[in-house]
Image (tube, rainbow, N blue to C red):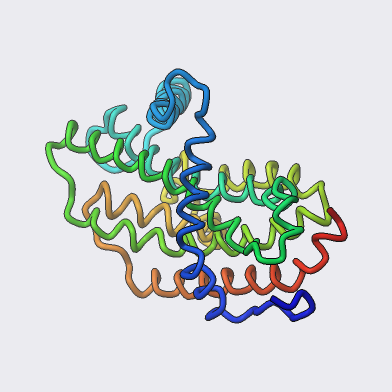
Length: 276
C-alpha cells in the first residue's frame, strides 16, 4: 500500500473495508468483550448482573422516591415501570458506551497507527460491536421479564433490529469523528463524558415524551434518540409496529452521519502518526 496515496472516503469503500476486515472485526470484538471481564470471578455473568442492578436502582429512585409514573393508562405497577425504563436504558447505553470510548480508541492503540496495513477505520466498529453485545444481553433480559410478567412477547418485537439501525449508524458516524478528534484534542474525552450525561436527561429514558408540555415535546423530538427510544418501546412493549416513513428518514439521516464520520476520519488519519 502506498503511504502517500489518499485514503478512500466513499461510502462504498467503507462498506468494502468492513466486509474485507470482518474476520479481524469479529476477533477484536471477542477480545474486547472477554478482556473486560478477564480475571474476575464472575466473568461474563457481570454483563447480566450490571443491567439488572442498575435497573433496580433506577426503578426504586424514580418510581418509589420520586413517585414517577409513565402514564400508560390504567393501573401501572412498578414492574411495568421498570420494563419501560429498561428499554430506554438499553438503547441509550449502546449510544453512550460507544461515544464515551470513541475519543481514546486511536490513542489507546497507538501501535496500530504505525502499521500502514492496519485498517484503523475498524476501531469504532469494534467498539460498537462490544457495546451491541451488552445491549443484546439486556434485550434478552427484557424479553424474559416480558414473558414472566405478561406470558408472551408481542410479534412486533421482531421489528426491534430495524428500529436500532439508525442508532447504530449514528453511533458509528459519531464514533469515527470523535476517535479522530481525540487524537488531536485530548480534552474531547472529558467533554464527551459530560455531553452524554446531559443527553441522557434530554432523552426520554426516565420519562415519557407525553409527560412534557407541547412546546418542550417539539424540542425533545429534535434529539434523534427520542424517536428511536420511543419506537423501541412501542415495538417491544406496546405491540405497535414502527412508524416506517419516519424510521426511513432516520435511517437516511444515520447513513449521512455515518458517511460524514467516515469521510472525516479518513481525511484526518494521515496526521495521527505525527501527533502520537
